[in-house]
Image (cartoon, rainbow, N blue to C red; front, side, top):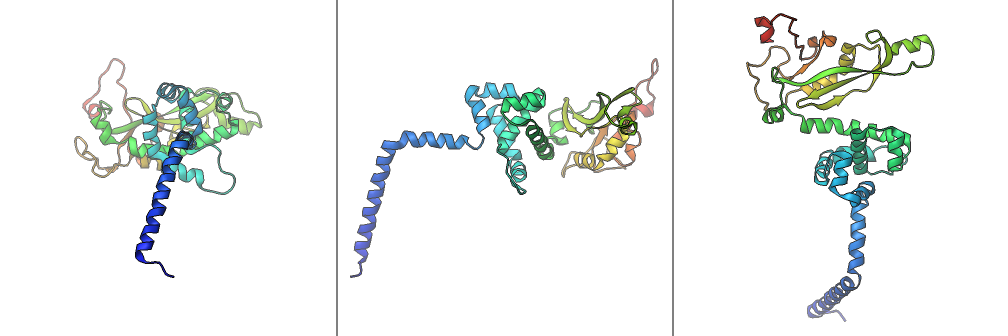
Amino acid sequence: MPSTATQVIERLNRQWEDEASNLVASHENFGDVARHVEEEASDSGSPILAEYTALGGDDTLKGMTNFSAPELDALWALVEPAVMITWTQGRGCKSSVSGKDALFITLTVLKHYDTWQKHAIDFNIGMSTLEKMVHRVSQTVEPVLYAQLVKMSEQMEAGNTFTNYPHALYATDVKFQPAYRPSGRYTEQKVYFSAKHKLYGFKIECSVAPPGVAVDVSDHSPGSTSDLTMMLDRLSIHRQMLRKEDGSTPEIGGEPTQFPQMWAALVDKGCQGAGRVLRTIQPKKQPRGGTFDRDDIAR
């Protein structure tokens, strides 16, 4: 015999009342357990970070990374899409370390910069795995954070511009790092010898924006590589970093005739010649016992 509409409504109401009473009873009997499981599940996405946060909260995080928990969450919100794409793409076994934990570990390594072996012991990760992971995170988040945080408009608003060169976004220089003489044949060794320093070693290129924040660091190159070669090898990166955003503040004195869509980079005499393909400024040193002429001051 088919049910009437009244019977259907009564049956559904009884089922709803039974389900509601079951939920109330379940909450009374198992509420504490459910909340504990939910708290553990919320931290399971980044167990390494959760473990250190539980030990000392913001004080621990600031001591390890210079970031508090809210600041770290804000930083993660900026880079999460890029990191998650990198962390999930490709075949094979996925990393056992979550993306947020990898960012936390990378910030710790960048601040304390101890040996890979020491950091690997701290985080219970293989040394080679840790090194690859830190480099992977750095390469992923660097372009994202630079585009979001290093802008000439924000530098001007904060008063963080070069006093004599307000249209320069950052200063670029090359640092030589001495190292032991490499093994192998002489032809393989000599590329690491710097004739200027009379030492074997490596070179890295670093760009620093006011008030002294490193915004870009290159991979190492052999010690014999010239400063100009290192800059030209990374020409596409500098062009992207110096590109003016839409609606940027007009420059004082008008736009330059060469590279008008690009901010300037301060360089030293080791990068002479880069101005042909990039907007660069080479500050001139005041002669000993002399003064600048009008043209030098105008530069």
